[in-house]
Length: 171
Ligand SMILES: Cc1cc2nc3c(=O)[nH]c(=O)nc-3n(C[C@H](O)[C@H](O)[C@H](O)COP(=O)(O)O)c2cc1C
Image 1 (cartoon, helix red, strand yellow):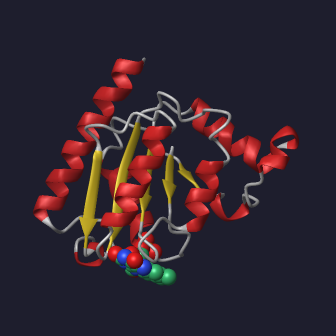
Image 2 (cartoon, protein in one colour):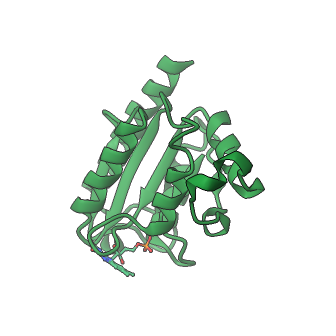
């Protein structure tokens, strides 16, 4: 399962996910979760009566062998819609021991990257060995979902091999 922290139509994070789908089509079946904008605002009062969209989201995570998160940075932090989605899983622990590949692809992105890793570690997701910060992302991927920056392509391949290693350890 893959989640883009950007819900923008022409998102470079979504393009990165597509690039990864193409690069690893033989090894992995990666499905993009498209429902981030349909998740209601998290409210602990609603946990007892969790909305159907949220239940479906949690089920997708629980059933996935691993999760790839690609996100931009907004105003020195995570996009609210991504943090909102993760907050729904905190008490139900879908991310616990789940292999998660984390890519922050933004202009700069350090703060969002550190913040997302901090959040995922506290909910016990397995992120070590497979996280990557891609700066100036718009110069590194083209419209045909090709990563045109050699070092970035090599970093993505390395991240994905470590991620698949963690998935295999868990199974
Ligand atoms: C509201 C807003 C705030 C942003 N704030 C930051 C920021 O704090 N740091 C950063 O590196 N980029 C920031 N950016 C730039 C995005 O990271 C960059 O445009 C990125 O490519 C967007 O990802 P996307 O193409 O997947 O939508 C911001 C963009 C927007 C729209």
